[in-house]
Amino acid sequence: MNKHLDAVILAGGAATRMGGLDKPGLTIAGCTLLEHVAATVRAHAPDAGVTVVGPERDLPPAVYVREDPPGAGPVPALRAGLPNVRAPWCALLAADLPYLRPEHLAALAHAADPANGAVLVDASGREQWLTGLWRTDTLREALATYTRNSLFGLLGPLEPAHVPLSGAPDSFDVDTPEALTRARADLENRSSAVCRGDI
Image 1 (cartoon, helix red, strand yellow):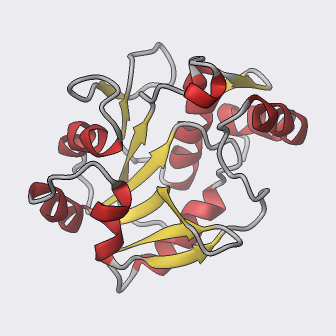
Image 2 (tube, rainbow, N blue to C red):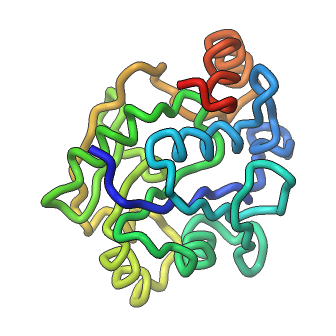
């Protein structure tokens, strides 16, 4: 099920566990982590608008904005990116998801009705708040009155549907050098195919 969606990809974190490296710009098989996420969105929904909250780059093609101040956290980043969303559904995604596949987005889209949205959950039942799909109007309304800086505090009360994470290791994102090494070994061929659009 392909919903009419746009995506906001958060790509402005400090990456302290990666030693302050430019995490969205790290590559797997010639494809940056950020390119992979954007390409996966477009593979699932070719007409999706993509907004990246983070430093502007040549690739992937997207609208680039910054939170104020830069690095302020995920809620200010969402505030900066959400005004560019025009579709009725908004995919809120991290930029460090090398295992993200179109089928994950399809599963979120299938589960999102009749709820306010849907999020992936890991094997322990923990919500992956930066891998979710939300009703745009509901997200705007929640953000308009929210004064804290916790995604759990913002999104948890919306009671999203839970979608079990499948086809990926327990650590879905890349937060450490060890996770990057493992992802490179796992995805050496597949990731480059996603960026070329061969999926």
